[in-house]
Structures are given as C-alpha cells and as structure tokens.
Length: 91
Image 1 (tube, rainbow, N blue to C red):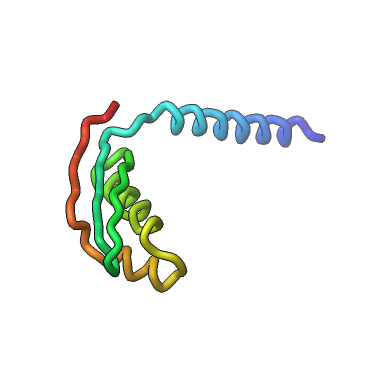
Image 2 (cartoon, rainbow, N blue to C red):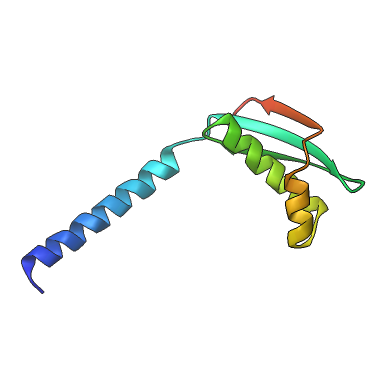
C-alpha cells in the first residue's frame, strides 16, 4: 500500500477518534421532563440535550413511544402538544 494511502487512512482514523472523544465528553446542558396525553393515555419522560429544543423533542418522542404503537400513532402523537414541559437541573 502506498505511503500516501496509509497517511490518509491514519488521518481519517485520528479524525474519527477525535470526534468520538469530543462527542462523548460534550455533556448535555439541558434536562427536561415532558408529559403528554394521547388518545386517553398519559406518559411523562425525561431527556437531556445540548439545547433546550433537542432535550424537549427527545423527551416528547420518548413519551410518545410509551403511549402509541405503529407509524400512524407515532406521527399523530408527535403532532400533539405536551400537557407540561418542566426544565430540570442537569446532574
């Protein structure tokens, strides 16, 4: 294998490793509890994220997964507004 190919592969591996370390050390800045009711079922879930919007979306999606099944139910639930959104302290 030519030296330039080995250098390029090494650089890609180093970049991938750097990204993995950076992503794992980049801790969440927001923690949110979202409660929702969909077709008579209620669920509350907590999620963390780098932004308030990401944390809220993740908690909402997790709550939907508890009260729905199938694609149609999931899509309908995701369009349902939360009954409560509470920002919590990040541990």
